[in-house]
Length: 307
Image (cartoon, rainbow, N blue to C red):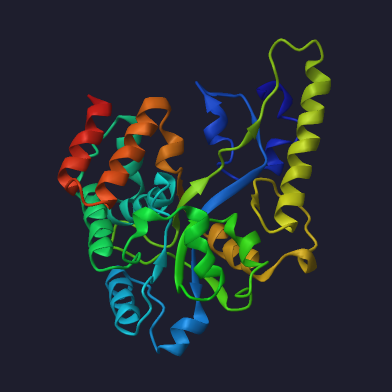
């Protein structure tokens, strides 16, 4: 699509949003929205039990222990039946522990999954499982089942995609939830390193008889989709748009504060990887979460993809 983007179209897109649509230096699609790993906290529950909203991993562990001691059985929601929900937590813990470069290098085959930081992120996920941060039997419930108590105000923390904002805004906890950066782990990553990014894209068939018209339509649809999705509170636009802020909900504005300062986006690992590699990652993350393999074995198994 390169020949069609120098009419000012590129200038209308946020920096970096074409990266995942670019192959061998050529652009093959136009993005519409961006989805981001988002940490939701129920401020009312933190206030009720006099617990500090965590900004570091140690504070996260402390908060989970205190909630459990106070009778809150599930400090953090997750639907362990679905591997991608586990991956949400594992991805961000690995980015926080290893840093963006180490994770991208492993995913692209330039580095190793046996990086000490990646293994450390896996260890921290298992530590959270062992202390009951995700409840007593998180592998037995689906995402939908895990979200019900969160929307009912019974679970204080939840890390999932930014599309969750739409459901929060329709729930009874709408005015009790806020979005904060996922806690810091060490010094290799901070709140400016996010998971997610731009994955969805519109493309044009190379065989169409009407290339010019198709691309014109594509631009219109992509920008319109971005605006409507943003105002509905389900996604962040990949485009620079004039938005009526009175139509934008509070949580989406909080998320925008994070994305506006973001330095890196590590695309979700099960999205970045393709086919059998993605399946292997999800299988191994589930085994890790179920405490069936060690973090070292997990990393070793993933490294077979780069052999």
